View 1 (tube, rainbow, N blue to C red):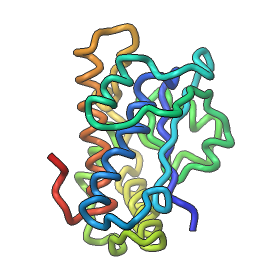
View 2 (cartoon, rainbow, N blue to C red):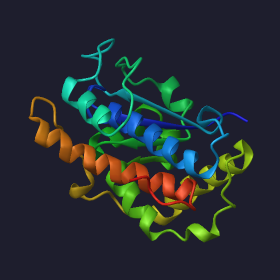
View 3 (cartoon, one colour):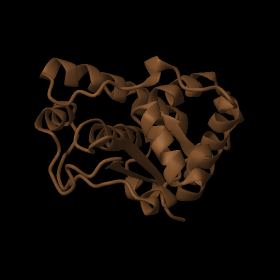
View 4 (cartoon, rainbow, N blue to C red):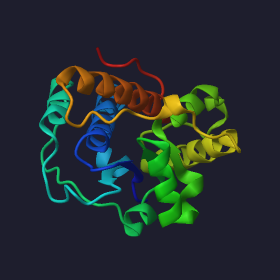
Length: 208
């Protein structure tokens, strides 16, 4: 059973999407530590990212983005920016974009990915509207986790219907701005990642 693959997409893959990639890992690690310390995150979930443009391909994360991850307890080790390809999208079970423009880019690149592609802020709103009790049981074994994760994406897509993302669903681009802006964007991403983990692995409070 391959791990459930989440792909985070922004413009240059050095600020927003890397923060989302690593903050999802952090949130999931913290949850597993409470629910099942013997479970291996890599057996359940894979979090990756890419950018719609290739200007920064091969570069490290933008330093203020990396600082936000480290301050929250996450790791930036091994990160390298990359340009989004159709192969990345083919491997993803859930695609979360920073903005609606990037969602449109994904749709144009791989039209078949539309049903599993969401603007991050829109996805967060949809999660609050879903009946999570109707999903398959939650579990830390790969089969149960994969079944619940797949059902969650399908439920979010059904709930979305023809509703378009709202302007407020977009994440501001913090590139070239100060640490205060990166902290605000990091907080927004953090909230969305913990909401996703809460939906996938409920049953324990967020780590303080």
